[in-house]
Amino acid sequence: MLNQLEGLTTREGTAADKAAIMHILAQTPEFTPPEVVVAEEVLDCYLGNPVDSGYYVLVAEIAAQMVGYICYGPTPLTESTWDIYWMATTPALKNRGIGKTLLTLAEEHIRAKGGRLILIETSSKPSYENTRGFYQARGYDVVSTIPDFYARGTIW
Ligand SMILES: CC(C)(COP(=O)(O)OP(=O)(O)OC[C@H]1O[C@@H](n2cnc3c(N)ncnc32)[C@H](O)[C@@H]1OP(=O)(O)O)[C@@H](O)C(=O)NCCC(=O)NCCS
Image (cartoon, rainbow, N blue to C red; front, side, top):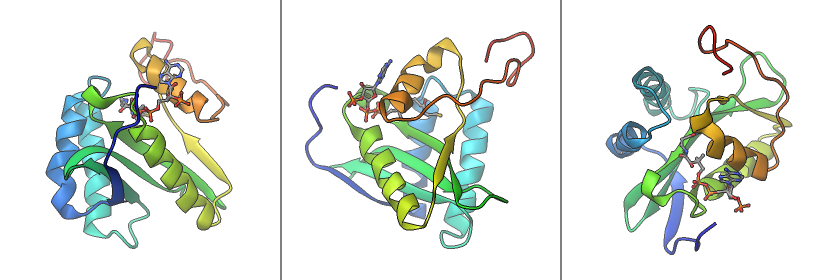
């Protein structure tokens, strides 16, 4: 990691954060346009009912500028399993500790809620190499890969 960013703060996301979160999603080269649409749907679900939607959103800021967000929630129909649904940091500020800060906070929240297992679905595409490295550096193991999952004839 490069130097940890000074002045990094975190808090729960609110409706006022939507445009800034969408800006980060649109800037993130790993995400395809249809993925951004689904990320927005999930975000809207949370913003429409932050208490009971089944989603939680935390955001990270520096000097009131949004620099990252994470969305997670309990996995439906499971006992205490949780999903990290989406996360992204401002591309220009990758590898500066923002993702780690957000993921650690989410993990602490999940633990406090009695969560016992966290799942993250990600891609084996070459463009996700850093993402996979990030999760593995944070202690997540690969438990399954599904060939042809996102599209036929691919390894991801
Ligand atoms: C994945 C992402 C959220 C990580 O956030 P970040 O702010 O860049 O990550 P951090 O700086 O907090 O942490 C970087 C950590 O990952 C590790 N890491 C990053 N790339 C790595 C790689 N290729 N191999 C091994 N480790 C890697 C670093 O070593 C560091 O760990 P350390 O502090 O223990 O040394 C961010 O890069 C991102 O938005 N990626 C694009 C969107 C995306 O893929 N989102 C997830 C969808 S499932």
